[in-house]
Amino acid sequence: MSKKFQFNERKVLVALFLLVIVVMGMLSVFSSGETLTEKSAGTYETLIPDSSTDDPIGYIDSEYKVKEGFHTNLPIVVLSVDKEMPAYKKYREGQEILSGEDPYVSGNIRIIDGGAGDNTLATPVSFNSNIRIKMKGHSSIGYDKKQYKIKTVFANGEENDLDILGMGKGSEWVLNGSMADKSMIRNYLAYRIASEIGGNNMAPDSRFCEVLMEQNGSYTYQGVYLLMETISRGDDRLKIDKYNPKNVYSSYLVRRDRQTSLDPMLETYGRLSGNVTSEVKPYDNWIGLKYPSQSKLTDETKKYIEKDFSKMERVIYSKDYSIFRTYDRYIDTMSFADYFLINEFFGNYDAGKHSTYMYKNSGEKLKIGPVWDYDQAMNNNPLVEMDLDDLAFQTRDIYAQICNDKKFMKLLKNRFAYLRQNQLSEEHIFDVIDETTAYLKSAQVREWYRWADDYLDPTSDNPGNYHLESYTKDDVTLSRFTDDYLDEIYVIKSFIQKHGKMVQVDLGKLLDGAEYDTSVGGIRELLLIAALLLLIIPSYLIQRKG
View 1: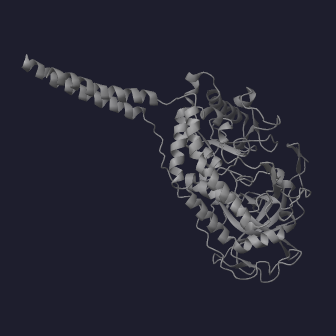
View 2 (view 1 turned 120 degrees about the vertical axis):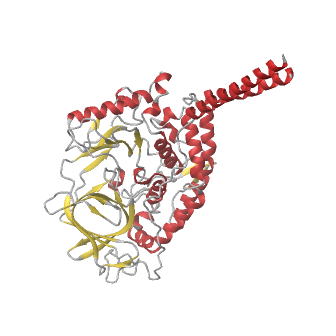
View 3 (view 1 turned 90 degrees about the vertical axis):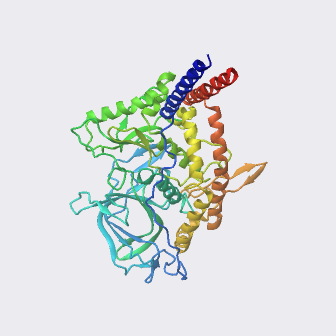
């Protein structure tokens, strides 16, 4: 009997050992494939501090004309236009109304960047092109300081793809100089950090510059701008396959935003079913097609894109759990996690409903990004003081659905924990802020001098200004107005410090409150318990029999 028992014991232990290996293999199969430590080199270089000791406004007169000897450590962008740019659109209660006239005028752009940190009008021109230029923006189109969209073209009007300031080739560019952001760094900061997280597919490239408007040999100082890439397809921009009209199954780039006649508006399931509704107006929260462009788009391709995007929405908004749980077959959850965290961290709550880009390469899942438009982020909303103690991005369309899933929330929580030690660490963010303000030392003074009538006006009487409403706390009315540049930088740092600390905590709360769990985490745990029991119980019984 003893020999027989020993023989069986060996067989049982070997069988258990093999069974445990099988169970652990299943655990490996069921484990998440997401990589939390993906890191991009980014597309931004270190900014060199401004070392100038001259009076920053010594070469600008009272009418903002540039005098001989003007110099700056930033690249100089000189614009000349053939005629005044028309105010081709206006907004009535948020609705876009177009005048019908061509918004573009012809002109020229010259860029001066000697690379030595001290540029003058005598420095050789490093870039020169004919352009088509128009004013751009939504509410910002009414501000005194204008922003521009530029198309570089040949003399015959054809697109002229050129590399500007090391940002790679392209023919469409933006001069972003939002008067809403007195710090001038909100967009740059968010784009640079987002680029470190996800490269060109998560953020546009941009360079600071100072803009002069030339007319009859006279130069008028316009201020500090970010010369930026547009969100568009290209080898140095968004990397998706080039459109072929002969192939219906196309890669595409869409934008969730206001209804406009400038882009094809898509009829997708989310809006048509009522799952995606406007918070304010029926012309809000539309999906517009950015690529392929309207001029090259065929009806067949448009129908395919509508159908393909709607397929994702049908799954995301499904009330049938067996359908909803497959959503990660249609969206790239890592890109959605990074987009959530970047916008939530910087308090950009306009994203998710406006200026929200999504793209899909042929044969791949839908991704979200690049990020865009942070001038009202970091506690710079005109109407309300931001609540630093709560998350808000989980209320956005699509996110309202997937943030109710523990699997996605675990990814968010773990991803943020990693980023918080790296690209989103307070130390790194503050270093970038300090580096940027040191680079803009003289340019910032010129910017505030040029637009002093707007920046230093604490009233709401100026229609061309961006005004922050006061708020009440503990029955005390508090002003949000800043008349000192360092105070504006303090607002940004204070927001990041306070809001950043609570993001991880509130992500945990969202995880705990999530209704669904589409992961196989529960199965993994049961299998692990089973594996342990398979080892412990027989060993215990064998020991007792022995």
